[in-house]
Length: 300
Image (cartoon, rainbow, N blue to C red; front, side):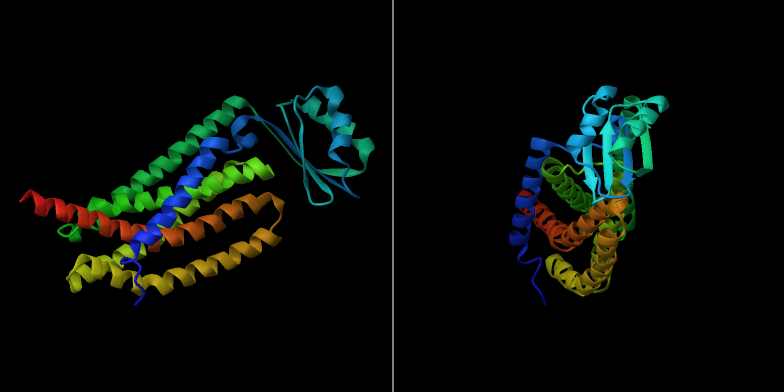
């Protein structure tokens, strides 16, 4: 048997260090929100031959007063341009201005006003909060039959702590990528975030549910039961995650630029979610149980 719960101090310290580092990154740099949230226009063009340099593009677009133009290469032939919100006539002027720099085709153009972007950001935050509340309510209901050992709502609360751990770590990585690699957070990022919540809590529920079954069937010391349950589900959790990671890694490298960040969120979420369900959630549940037990004993 692998002693995961008994060595919980090590795992919780490791998690705390990475969690604090992620929080510092978020507070220092924040997330680099894309046009979906901030408003503006984003244009992607694909050149027949090699794409021109950023200097050439800025020179061609300078007379159009587009404000700060951000040009990012996506391979040898593709260029993604981001600038202020423009209307359709200005959009056409941009295409005309780029024509002398080489033959190209327009792959996509999106223009979103700042009000719509702010509204989307608010709705995204509410979607995450509502998902967390529903998960807490569901777990509190499911584990009500073993509340004589640990209050059922504590299972939900610990699962939420694990989810927050995963969310902050993923967001922290994207804060670093946004600062040093210009990676932006878009609407697809939120969709991937919610997918990560579902996968992470699924792993946690598998471990908790086995603990519930063993408590009802075997009884005994709570810490030993949780340790035994974690070991029972360890192989399943790791194998499931590895299968998902293999698929996501293939999609990340061969799925194209447009879904790369979405896939990266899923990869990070699966990694952190698997870790937290095994090495964070269950040990925290035992810590909480032991603290409550000591308080009850000392109060008598």
